[in-house]
Image 1 (tube, rainbow, N blue to C red):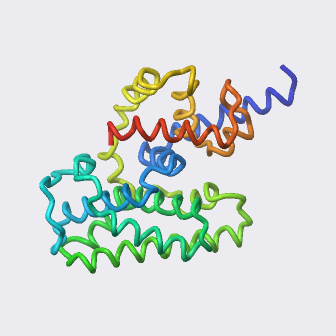
Image 2 (cartoon, rainbow, N blue to C red):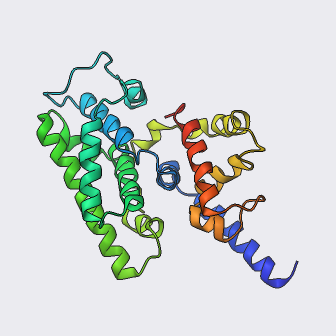
Length: 250
């Protein structure tokens, strides 16, 4: 091993140590954002309306199922809150010059905040539906504008670096500790090994672990951190497979 290789290895080992010392909610938030969980109009809208139900928002559409906690939101009927999700997506697109990928990233980032930030829950608690929706619209609008400002001022290459600066303290994400318990990580890893054909998507548990270690998807590709060399396009399949497994646990 030459000196350059040893230096790179030492840097990666130090990064793992640093990220391992961070609260679970901080590592989880970054991984979920990288995976774009909640980044679609359907997922975002259903989660938002589920949180509205839990917060006692009035004038809500009828639903045959009433969640008792955040982990039951996924049991709401398909399409519940979809119109709101589409409206939020449209807002993000309008602020991000129509960039669909960045809009998906913004929705995923706000999705994490909705679940983890008690300040948002307090703002919507007991409010009429229209007021609760406006709270989320404001959060999405501000997140979009902050992203553009951060990217312009810091010359970020992609959303991942900018988002980390905008949401790096983790101090307002306590709710994530209950959305997905740290103790479930091993179960998730076993599911990633068991439910996905390793010949089709090899090294899937390692991909998720790298995200928890603080690496972005672009870094994983550029630095060839997976034993099986993957492109940005093929890594999208990894992301979707991890999303599918996480749905069982969140």
